[in-house]
Image 1 (tube, rainbow, N blue to C red):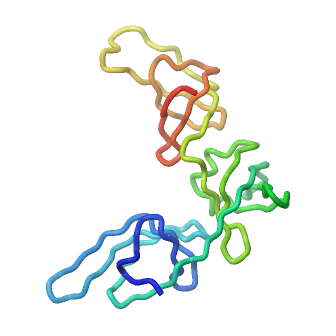
Image 2: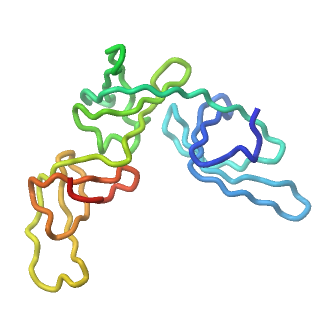
Image 3: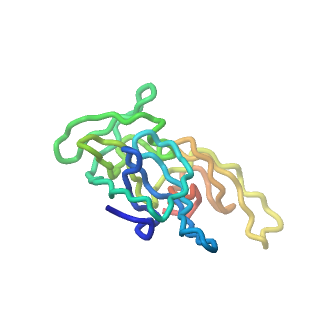
Length: 185
């Protein structure tokens, strides 16, 4: 059993019979009261985010989440279909569970699948992914001493703010955690 001091960002725990991942935590101790840990948790099965304050006496267990690799195949309705890289079995994960990851999924994308109790529950994307620029307004000549930025549309429909020298057809590296431009590929 885990206690209050075991809560860290990224820790996967079972709370109220559901697997959660800790997104944020803040330790607090006030006067005569015991220590508390304010947390923001994301349910790994539903994708819902909750805020919960753990008391010093609360105990929980670590979620046994395994990882495997898979390839994204296609979206269909409200589900996203994947193929396991080792067994070649196909499975689907609801879009609501995947959350923002759906913005970055392109056919053939390699992902890490999180498995809990024998079933695929979510995916982890690579931190940096490469995309092609589909639409880019022309760079405006003039005062570029401040750097200058413009918004472009990527092949997956995502809009990203980039430097003025980026053109349609360029390949970019995008940070999937922040949704920001990193560099040219």
